[in-house]
Image 1: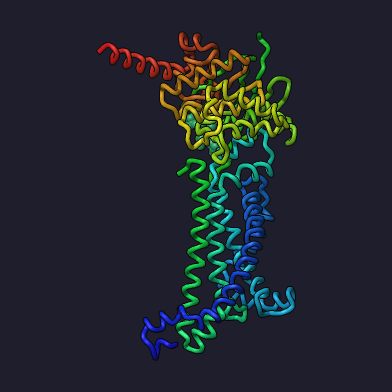
Image 2: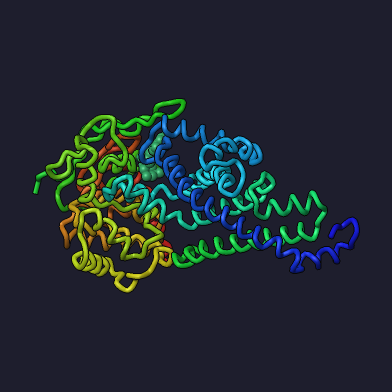
Length: 236
Length: 261
Ligand SMILES: Nc1ncnc2c1ncn2[C@@H]1O[C@H](COP(=O)(O)OP(=O)(O)OP(=O)(O)O)[C@@H](O)[C@H]1O
Ligand SMILES: [Mg+2]
């Protein structure tokens, strides 16, 4: 149903029809798969790189100009490319890694390339929020650097880290939709092939509704968990 | 006992800013006896914090030595320094408790570093809680505590490994007068009970007068004067000490006048 022929209301109502959802449902599955796998990678590598950034910084526990400088520069390079360009650039990389340059797994490669650097920066800024006095106290007690990192810095900034990860997942979701138009499948693919190419605005509406619901749910879970921890610690 | 338990000699420290060098410690000589409360008073920026922070090497001095007991702190390697820090307690103006841990977890944190485990650890935590009078707050988070209670937890945490020395950097400066007194009473109590040597930094002379045996007056990176508290109050030698004491007396007189009115 196109908005060129039908009223907004009719199209909107039809976006809830069985015919539409038969096409959207499988796409949700594909999107969920891409988002879930990418998010796990983003979580692991983003935390790792973020921790390295903070530890090796000039004021960090293990200052190292070279590591900090090189890592920071590489992250900035990836961060300065728009998502579309990262997807295009990563096509040959994806082919080398997963055998083809289209489909969900290829898309995951570009999602990782784009969102790991982003999340690494978010982790960095979360960890930098810690009160320096707490680190000093741990040092004064004779705690080693790695122990301070994992028993003080990470737990103390956990609510903020959770918020950062929530933001990263939301960005992963929106980028998954974008990658859809480059043959990755999923919600984005449905939106482009039906909604854009064939004027199926009912399908377009359905994809919009799905994206909004998923993002709201992710944001809700992230906010709730983070708030729960803050409440438990009596910090709010 | 005239054995010097803590000995700082010819300590120098310079901070390198973008534009300039700031000489913060200009040859500090200080010695404290075992089991005494040694106060260091000085105006803001005198270098007091830098001095105590050099004593456990949170700040690396440029030159000079710090000796505590028979351990020369300034010549220790990294691992040995961490080992030694476990025997030097420290408390802070902003308490610096870990918000992610309960009161008892905070107190148990240093015990993990020394490998005290299981029942021994939980007994030690209980003992420390009893010492600072916070047994019923065992399971509370620092976020639920008042400033005075937080500092008590800070003290309990600092004492958990039974150190010989406690470094206190403006530990009462964020507290109201009433709470300050109760924390100082606690410090005096543990000083007597445990024979702990305490280095107490403050910019409030009344804190020194109330709690310390001996004191030093610090200004602009130098110790101008040190000696028994009562001697310095009776016969201050340097201008800064005289200033401090006259301001202190003015406040006292002011209070007395208000009391009489
Ligand atoms: N990390 C640093 N980098 C540069 N300058 C510093 C640093 N730490 C302290 N200083 C400078 O050293 C001087 C002494 O500071 P310090 O904190 O030791 O003073 P203080 O006597 O403890 O003062 P206060 O009573 O305000 O705590 C100050 O001029 C301060 O600006
Ligand atoms: Mg200070």
